[in-house]
Image 1 (cartoon, helix red, strand yellow):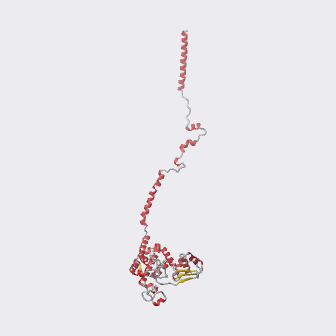
Image 2: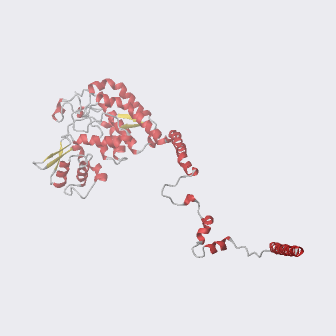
Image 3: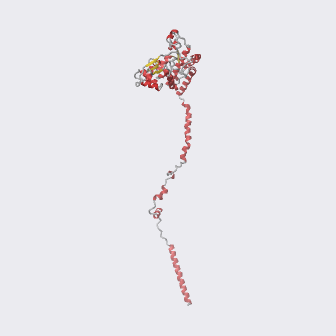
Length: 380
């Protein structure tokens, strides 16, 4: 019984060991056999299996196609890159060269015409002392004091004599007109002081006042003055007042205001300007002289009761009236008057009051010319 029990136990032990060995072998074999692996899927396939419907390819590829954040619109102003800021920073330095160029170019701005203009101003300034110191605002002249300046006037006339004709020819028209007006007026002052005080002839006082310049005798004989006999040299050429008037002021320049700037040394003449004429301000000076002239009752007035218009004898067609036709001639107004008078009236309307213009433009009236007073424009 003892051996049988022991043999049974041994058999069970052997079966246990055998079973254990069998199972171990099976596990070993199973661990050693290659495991069947499924094919590796791509990231895209895995994404499709995970979200077969909702996955959007664009979102998956967004990191590859996303544009630079700089170009994306935002609610705030885009921040400028350093390269964008640089132009604003260097703007002052970009402008500075232009400023420097302008300053450097300034000396070159002085063109020949400007040099000539400076010469013109300097030349006519030589006449300034005479006009400013001896002629008042009304154009009256202190001849008594001026007579003591005969030497200074002679010096001025010598400047006209020595003046370079090449410089004169290079001047524009305005400066040439100023040149001849100053020469004319200075020479007339010279003639007057040479004959001041005026000695009148008793027989001639029947026709002219005692101080009339018509009493000034000609140089060659007794009688009224012959202005063509009073000659002087301009730019090395001999002239008299009549030659200057005919050759230059009438023929060369189409500017009728000139004739109201030429002194006649008389009360009925245009007031003498108390400064030299200058080319750069000639138009303004002439306008001012015209206004002064027409403000004188000896030059222009309207009698509204009699419906008459009175004009200076200087504006008669046979004197200076025809000189206004070319520039102020008109067929639209003043048709009842001849061409020269129409031109003069059209000219006058630029310088008289609105009331006078209204009368001249709307009324019918005859023109009367005022008798000329040759009395010397003497301040004494």
